[in-house]
Amino acid sequence: MRNLKLDWPVFAISGGFLLVFVIASLANADFVGNLINTAFAWSSLNFGAFWQVLMILTFLIAVFMSLTELGKVRLGDSSKPTFSFFKWFSMIMITLLAGGGVFWAAAEPMYHYLDTPPMYSETGSTATAIQAGLSTGFLHWGFLAWSILGTLGVVVLMYAKKKGQPLKPRALLYPIFGEKIMHKSVLGTLIDVFSILAACAGTIGPIGFLGLQAGYGLNMLFGFPDTFAIHFAMIFFLVGIAAVSAATGIHKGIQWLSRFNVMITVILAIAILILGPARFIIDSFVSSYGSYVQNFLPMSLYRGDEGWLSGWTLFFWGWFIGYGPIMAIFISRISDGRTIRELFLTVAFLAPVVTNFWFTVVGGTGIFYEINEPGSVSNPLNEGGLPASIFAIVNQLPLGAMFAFLFIFVTCIFVATTADSISYSISMILTGKETPDRFIRIFWAIIFGAVAVALLYIGEGSIDSLQSFIVLTAVPVSLFMLPTLWLAPITAKRLLNMQQKKEAK
Image 1 (cartoon, rainbow, N blue to C red):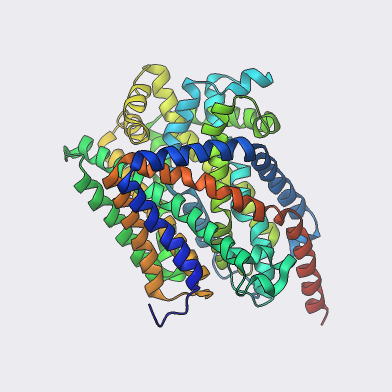
Image 2 (cartoon, helix red, strand yellow):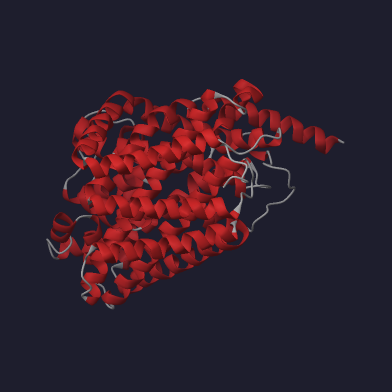
């Protein structure tokens, strides 16, 4: 470690906080949980409206930029993309979906189907229970969520990179402060620290939940005891995959794992369509998407039931905003040679539609079985939580045991791909290199697993607390994501001028 050129203040503060969090949870998990829940409630109450406006403005400005001449700007130094479209799109999809690809795809549509969100009755929006269940999931994993993760921030970072600056969260404010924020800056250090902590919380949480889901699934399938030892083994199996992938780099491990997972997920989706309620899935997707688009603004700007709002929409918005800078760094790293129009249309439109269709395949199948046999999915969901929902659904399909095993496997790869990409991005921040030292990449992948295991040992509530902590980090992160609303168009215009001058020579 001594010979590594690291940003030691950022490393010490972010790593030190994780250590303190684990020690404090070990000493008094209830106190830590209550403290974070109180801060969580304060954050969503005082910043919720701001987050909602930030999310929708980010999407609208991204749409505007894609439709104007700014969309022609080619990001980076290459005249053509570094990766093929399929490799590039696979890395974006799998990294950003993370555990949501299975955890929430199965459970969230069912939650909203069983208990129609208050926004529908309070805003006078018309929707059937099926449409309400699916379209609310579409909102939370749709255009707004993807836009905050990989559009405006990427443009600003790529501008800073063009000016010779490293890809770090603090570079989001480079157009305002110049090189002052890039070197020995307290503000820059804080920006990097909050971004790393948010990414850690958002990555360690799904790793911990994966251990619980895998334990539940292996117990149901093979009768293995659902114990801490099984959770430990599954987490370190996952972390081993993530560490090897991160060590081999973006051009080998990360893109290979992403492509593999996309292909397996597509096969699963096709198999469910063939063996499951294909017509119901397609009809529900089309009608629910119509409801989503029709009610897009009322749903996005709903400010009614505060309890529901903080438990659902604001929780997700805090999660995605917190992830925003790290994801923007990763997408910047793999998007050399792409135009702004390609990037925005892929991230803000194609990826959300693909995600929403996947949610309909998994969650819509659950709704279908619940309609035909009330309680067949809802009872396991209410009793066993997120891990139970996916198994309650696939067990009703032909070859249910095989599907259940494949979903455990796919979830492992989903979360491992996110863990390796985030460990790679954090290593870029700490070293200032686009290809950081292998040791530091492996180190962060192992840290994710170690903290997840430690918190699971303390109790499942500690994982919940860390997951909620990402919403707290979203408060400062949202403040330095705000300037991207005007900095992205300004820097894109500068990049366009530079590009036109280069082409004129």
